[in-house]
Image (cartoon, rainbow, N blue to C red; front, side, top):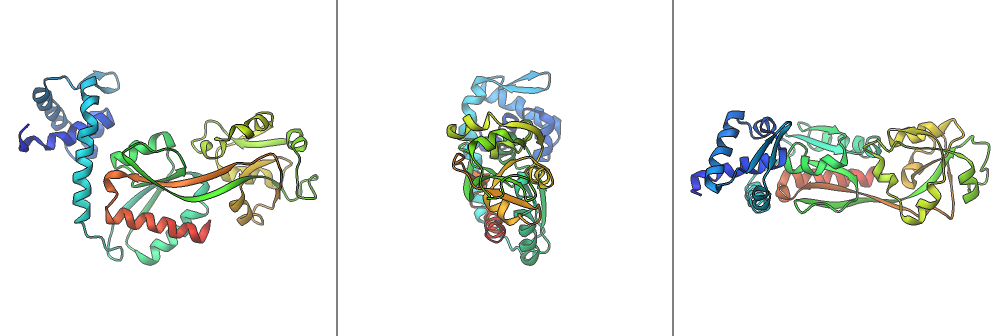
Length: 304
């Protein structure tokens, strides 16, 4: 491959990741025919079809998947080298950052992040979205979001992560619940009362529903009468009713008056939870991303 053909590799990596020429064209700011022409040139260079057309896009060949990691790593290194030479002044920057977060942080961390950024960087725009955790890692690699804030998982090699929040789960009910006047609950009482849980179809469910084996035996026996789509729906649902819910202790304490809650101490649920900030490894030294990550951590100290 001649040096003049190196830009074709960026197209190759994008096609492997997006699997659709239209998405690649939009991502790279080029036309779809340019994507097709680049792939055609690469097929000649590598003497391999590289991509097989399917009904909804293209599928990489085995050879394409074999060479992709090295090409993606080289592109990441070049991006990182470029980022180190990029100047970023938050006071004058007009950057638009896209953040994906689970709904748990939309009423706590995110408002505080808005406040901090507004004071330090009044011209910067923050767009907060909620995407499935199954999609965010590829979105980070593709650049459609800048950081993701969600439960702790083992990230793929091209993603960096840093844990910023840890807590434990507790049982909560409405303060006016006719039972539990002592603020405690036994396993038998837990199983004999009705519960509200996160829907298994919710993109948010994994943070509270990835229980340890010790908890699962008890939780599977719950009388689930209602399901909601968001964390804050849990608290709203128990506020004026007789249902129980499981929530993070720190946030339950912080919202105990707003949702008229009672925290029930127990000796049968011992579950830790944590959340991390995720970003693309290729942007690990990008000063704007480093700044944004630090602002998230700063906001977490004030709000969580």
